[in-house]
Image 1 (cartoon, helix red, strand yellow):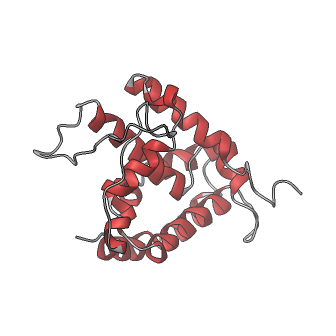
Image 2 (cartoon, one colour):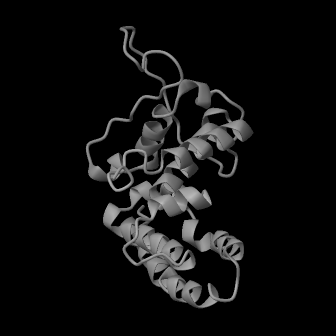
Image 3 (cartoon, rainbow, N blue to C red):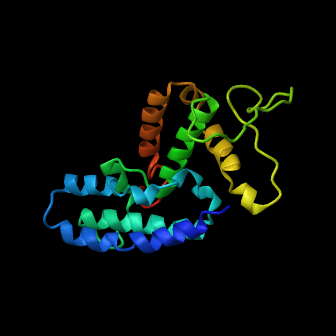
Length: 197
């Protein structure tokens, strides 16, 4: 299964949004434009499993998202979008994908994901020697032989989960969501050369 056809269809559907926002931005305040952006649920449908799609497919969606924020904030066509996301406290597409994956992982690991009759099974490292993944809440990566499995939710979910601080992993879902969102917002442009100039 691949989400590439869905994303390509989505790209055609949302490609008109920048034009729409370019017209309405002159008649509504910024906070209304922000609320209208949040109403675009189509833009993030099934985003948790987008790692199964090729980067070239999702890149166009991320470009449209950046274009929308440059338009509604009256920024230049080539202005850096990172500070805009940080100012408006909205996650860029890749960070949004990781955020949604992390929320899904928290529910799966804590046996709170009942949306489907089956869930992906994850395992812990089983070796006895000392490594940074030997203890704590880290997950083992599934054995992969193909690029498709490397981009699967099974692999991406373990990667995202293992990248989180242990203290964050062990919080309640509500606190986990709030803490992780704030961390991702704070990290926008943290290693950006444009923002360090």
